[in-house]
Image (cartoon, rainbow, N blue to C red):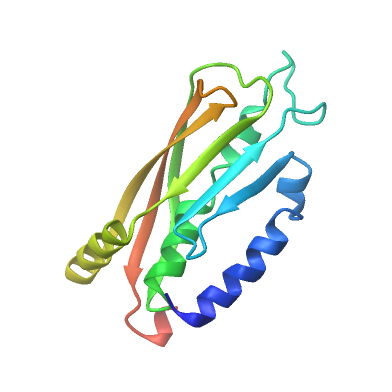
Amino acid sequence: MKNSNQRKFKRLIRLINWYPPYFFSGIKIVDHAPDFSMFRSRLKLTWYNKNLVGTAFGGSLYSMCDPFFMFILIIHLGEDYIVWDKYASIEFVKPGKGTVFAEFKLSKEEVAEIKTKVDLEGKSICEFPCEIRGESGELVATLKKGIYIRKKTSKKEE
């Protein structure tokens, strides 16, 4: 991991829980690995993130999963790569009642495979699954995140 990315993300972790879309949606980062290879987010059901039928607003459920695979790749691939969220899909399995959690992690081996693929092909779109679960482990929603990764080739393209 590059030192500048590590410093940047240490600061980001301290600030992200105060980021208005997260703060006002009841979303909080409750855990992360020291090397930023894993993040865990939580959504507490409150009056300001309930939908019309009293369960978690779908946009908040998606939002609690939005940037984390991108963060992990930016940190571990370093500044020689461009990493963007490309697409996402969410399937609501069960109403989100109470507090729900999502975890995002990529191993060093997974990151190395992605880096090798991008280095060989120039770019790639990688898809990552994610689950949102309630406090007792029940599945609330499944997501797929598509992340675009490209090796930087020149300063002009950045």
